[in-house]
Amino acid sequence: MDGKCLRPMLLLLLGFAASTLRAQGPPFQTDDPVPVDLHHYEFYIFGSADGTPAEFDWTGPALEFNWGALPRVQLHAILPSGGVLPSNNPEYLPGGTGARAFGLTDIEIGAKVAFIKESKHVPQIGTFTMFEIPTGNYNKGLGVGKVWYKVPLWLQKNVGHWLLDGGAGETIIPQTQYRNFAYGSFLVKYAFGERLELGVEVVAHGREGYATPQTESSTLIDLGGYYHFKHHPGEQFLFCYGHSIAGQTETYAYVGMYWTWGKDKTKPDAVTTAWLPRPVNAAGFQ
Image 1: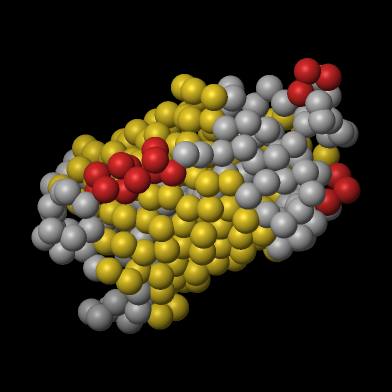
Image 2 (image 1 turned 180 degrees about the vertical axis):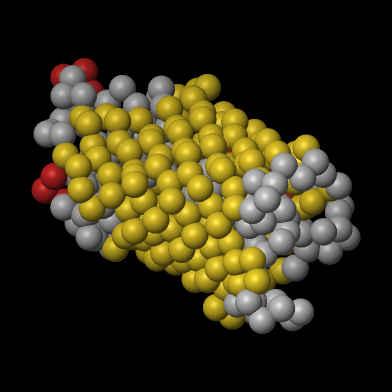
């Protein structure tokens, strides 16, 4: 993706002012620079899909776990299963070919680090570096076969009930039939009271290689949100759906459940009572 398109997205975030810190992530592809609170935890059960006419891939059932291990540092892991459905259409050669497969895919581990805290005139800034471990079967198309990386920079600002979040990064894949590619996204989210949050994001990425569904670059618009259960603090239902508006035809979807809990200063072990979530994709583009 052209870097000229990413720079305005990042600079836009620098112009807003707000007070309280809120965050997101899944079900959106835009992540955030806000780690889980110290001694707190997050757990997801989810499924997601990302497909083009060349190939349809999905992840799920999958488990995600996040841990506020240190002040302003979050450790992250995803244990995913998933599947690949290549179209085997000659129109997309050499991409989109092969047999259908399902099983364990590449495990994701990572660390989110916040190094600039949000203030009145400055957004929160941080990174969420991820390592994809080659646990999926490379010969079946369920894994890359080598360790690969996601290196993003995220910025976030709150304005009342509004949240503005965005950033850009590079995915590094040292494998044949794959390409290193840039990606970027920008999210606007609004909280409707204490039960419902809805957001819209613009996501763009470069060509990912013939071994992926995303054989060409694409730009998508995704709509999604969170429903917070009234009698179960720290429990949420997450949902998102999106489709391309430019470049290669592409569809994205996510659905999952989210729980958060942990220790705070007033209670030795309590469920987090903040109704706004701190869930991200996948990061990434899988």
